[in-house]
Amino acid sequence: MRAIAVAFALLAGAAQADEGAIQGVIDSQMEAFRADDFATAFTFAAPTIQGMFRTPDNFGMMVMQGYPMVWRPAEVEYLEAGPAGRGWEQEVLVTDAAGRLHKLLYTMVETAEGWKIAGVQLLTAPEVGV
View (tube, rainbow, N blue to C red):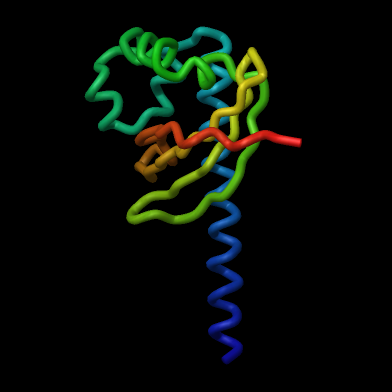
């Protein structure tokens, strides 16, 4: 019974470490976008994403046009996260420069170089009310 408790504690610790590493990758990519450093931002993308866009400039244009809240976030808050298939999913609440909220789902994969962003999906924005 004690061995099971220890195993669960180790898994919980690994999940915490993964969550921190994953949030660090997302933060780093957003910082690169804020600086218009598309070459660095491109390094945080999974190989499949890099293959789709082929160059940092193509990738940067897609983000500026399709995900402006990621290119220029005013605030970022991390929500629920957890394992999903062979990777990890991280929900992120982003406030854009105009104060609008956007809820995003980041899909992450672990590579030999560490965690990489394999996709970002725009979810329904949360309702704000009084």
